[in-house]
Length: 414
Image (tube, rainbow, N blue to C red; front, side):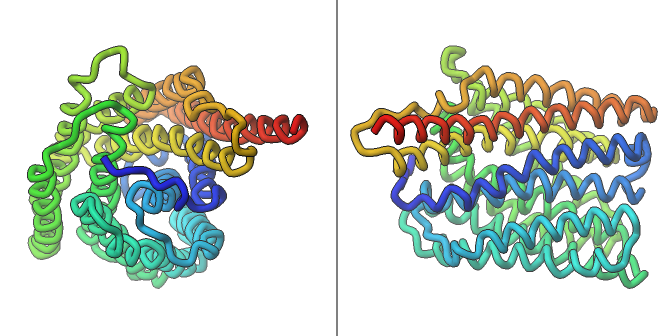
């Protein structure tokens, strides 16, 4: 397990601006369901569906992954970030691009699609430029660095493909559906799952008291994904919607979920933290997405993965990272010798449990609305999404509020 380098931690505002944007986008997804009702639940090609999917994939998952990565690399990997002072502009470009893309897709608006097609690949290029050189320069943990580097490449490929699709749609020349499939496969497996698997190699033993996947096995899995994903994508384009690409995506996602569940299994009940329970729930939801996708039920697979399972995983990590960032800030702000609260006390388990229960209810209602697409049920699911992400955001803001209050109390008594 790598040693944490707290002295290399970036300024708290760098990861926090992304992590605090995540629940805002979750609320936005719920509002879309409140407005559109069951419309996004009938077809993957409906404008409301395309907007909702990208609100989840970019707004929720993308912000969580950008923020987590920018905190994780310097502290856990020892990889310095280039251009830290530009992080606010990166945040603005990424979130403005996401907003414009969602607006352009839902309203079929040419201007927003054109701007999003420029801003979003720029944001991924920006992230890669900030992180890749430090990743190569860092010492040790070669498998961890290889996995993160591969995920950055997958994210960049996803963004470039998405830009081509957005610009084509803005020019009234939509690309064939098979290219959309390739874009989605690279986004889910080549970006999100690869990054979770790489970072999980450190965070699962550190925060969930699990073991680690043997290095040889993880290296084989990583190499298999890096070989199979582009080959299956090329075959999918040539053969026009062959089953190879869904099979690779399903196998890659299912193997990740099974391996993580296998690591969790031996952990004794007394050591099963709330992060463990969030991940257990997310992985159990993610697992059936694989057979659903392989069986041709793409809408169900998307809801299970993008709407429920993956947000549980990355949202739980945010509930750990934000208190950790706040704790580092307290160490720097409070005079040496003054005892400060531990990380776990900054966000007690009761708050994390409320978030998990709210997310579980929202996820169940979302799946129910997909299986029985009634307008009232879809709007109830949207209301539950607003409540769940509002609970999540309230927990994160509570950490910062309590940390600030503690620092002020120390300064008053000093």
